[in-house]
Image 1: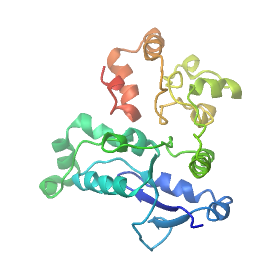
Image 2: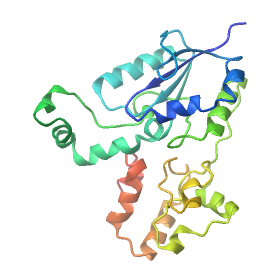
Image 3: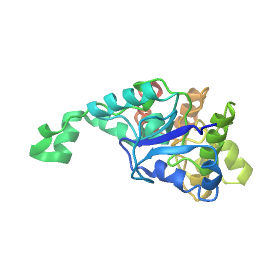
Image 4: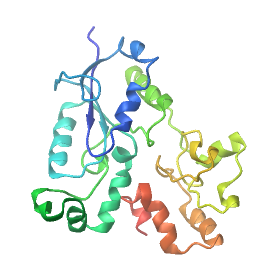
Length: 247
């Protein structure tokens, strides 16, 4: 029986999420017993277009990106965005707020008209996706969980509770009590509360909960003296593509 063929594609981003797959060093030999990688720029020079499973790293930000992701979707039986840029649009979405013309001129100067761009957007804004792997970058454990789930035909176990839960489990002092703005109250857990555990507030790089109590979060922020404009900026850092950040 032939092994499912896997491709990993990189669009607009730092490609750190692609590299995180390679960081599964101890598990890769076992993974290769069950799948065959046929396209992976960070790991191999060979290229093939006959794949069943496609992992997508990075946001869609150019007309050519749009065409390429549509072609990949047509070939892949399972398409999985991996990381904040692919699942949320990520930090790339900040250019949408500045304006495309401004950003082109800021980066390319008098050569701005040489380049084509569109508003930054997550993969699911262009084509349907089957699963998502969250994070900036995703934890290895979640990458492995999704791979195992796809191969076994089950639903992956992805957390859908707030980062606050993981903070409490670790005994962290609440970042709000330290005077910091923390999105952990509405951010999807699964990172092990890594930022608060090292003294930094959560910025919701794993996205917002499916049923996030956004009004409650805004009330918490308002109690700590933030204006509506400041509140929206906190949402916009990673989640600016979605309507919750525009309200």
